[in-house]
Image (tube, rainbow, N blue to C red; front, side):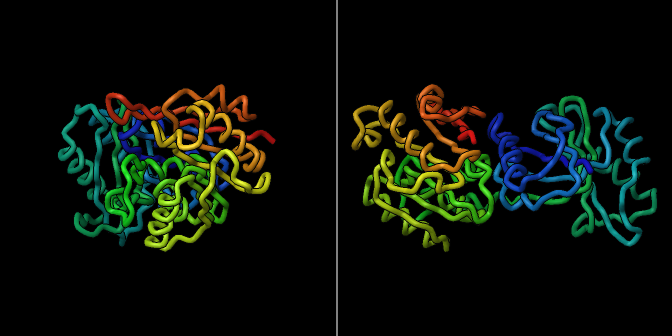
Length: 336
């Protein structure tokens, strides 16, 4: 079957990468069908349960058909495609137009709903058994049946300033969850954050079912992270330690996701920012299992440093935080 992911527009590349990371975590075979603006479509035999993990996806659809984004083509598609709808099931139609506003969405929903109604099915706008969605983007329209709707409100309740222990500069929960997901960590796998700070990445990793290990050179951060993790019912191991020499066994963790500090706090023990990245990436490479992924956030280019540490760079993303700060997100792999 074909499955479409309605992606959020909060980042240009992270939403799709997050989907791919989750599919990889479930060792899923699939084929890319279309990569459109805020819509990613794959062909897959059986869809794994990844909806609860995703942070930058709105909806997941079973695609019933695809056509040009004009009223005649959409009407023809909706009127002829196999709806896979039982006669006793009720339905409603919802539509979304990405960026371009060519058609009237309300009219489109009504027209599509009327066509399906004339095919002998009952409408229920308040509590339908099935929700059909029309997604218009880049001159194309995907028509599908809603499989999952992602609850993104949970991330708002975990924003950094709402935690028991707060420190400025922490990643937003949706970003932290996306980074955890692009590490392709499996449920039950061990994820390390060697610069854990207030524990934001570990919280999101723990809520996906990963086993968490965190370290920070500052005692107050470790104590604060422990408070935050316990508040969300997450276990794991935390330690006061230097990311350049953690004392963990070789090849002992399944993924590393980390956002090292910037500015003066980064130089608490290191001679320079480059020295910190150089030594910590070598330590991460030693601890990470071969064939697995590390996701590192940085303010400076670290690709060469990572490659010198033994990693292969397999992904890049950039996130502009404000005028003077752009986060560089790099996905690394330790080759087998």
